[in-house]
Image 1 (cartoon, rainbow, N blue to C red):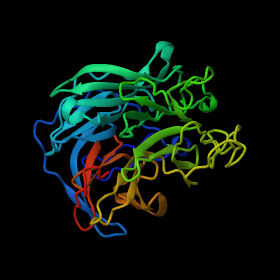
Image 2 (image 1 turned 90 degrees about the vertical axis):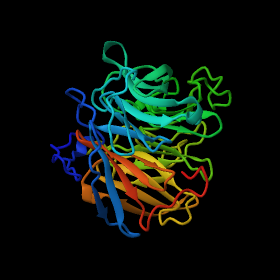
Image 3 (image 1 turned 135 degrees about the vertical axis):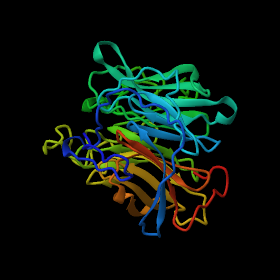
Length: 408
């Protein structure tokens, strides 16, 4: 989707929405913005929610289509900008110059620098993981993941641990999110590169959820290890364009959400070796209004139904659990960013069961690209815009620090 021109210096950013490309973003042009010389006053406003007023504070602005935010132990942040820049943001809102050492990215269409997460042992190793669209030969590209050591002004010891193969032409559907299971594995979500049949082809990595060891090697117990007709990296398949991935700290269970076409965004709880249907089963239709040609209906033999589905696509991006905080009104919630809907979705949970939904931040009119939950009990989001913002949300009734270190 190509957003309309933003209103400058305003927290609420209006975007033009196109049904034809509900999850697309504007192309990235122009020079990198300069670092902010000094922090500015952090503006706040109050928005409504079902559980009471929510205070929203603008930490930083002037970010060019930010895609992901990682929360640093010192109270600062790492933010990716889709054109290929990684920035540090202080707790006071100071924005650094772009860090050196970021891998080259394919910054066309939906491609660019995507997710950033801290390694499980970050406090010791200073390692981070980046996902991005990697350029290939003859205009091709594919999702890739690299690890690096975070320095003050640059990344060091950059190693590419995963490359989607084969690389394909086209600027869309790269995914991608990264999540750890706490057992020495990293999961990488991807897109099918807008090439529907690839999701069902086990000898291709498009449209697959991948599971690797932390160093990028393949776990011996992956479901397709030893099969000559399948890639050993694959955990599950039949995915469309997955931009949401998180592990529930309460159970260790992996949750994934993906864009449907025109309708049919869905949540899955991916299990090893299973087929999640795309494009054989979908609740959506083509952007043209026509039926997906491969689809046999909302269910197809040999495929898993969605755990949760939206008939009208909110265009999901980013996912974070808010759990282990019994004194917070938001306890036992799952947050998801929504692009075309311009909201932050909060799902109420009873165990794994989704029992309610509300949509926050509609007043801002902003595309919510990523969401993370801090150890301080606050929620952090980035907005997808040429003047993108990093925002902090205080839960209704005040903050509620985690009951333990794995609070979500």
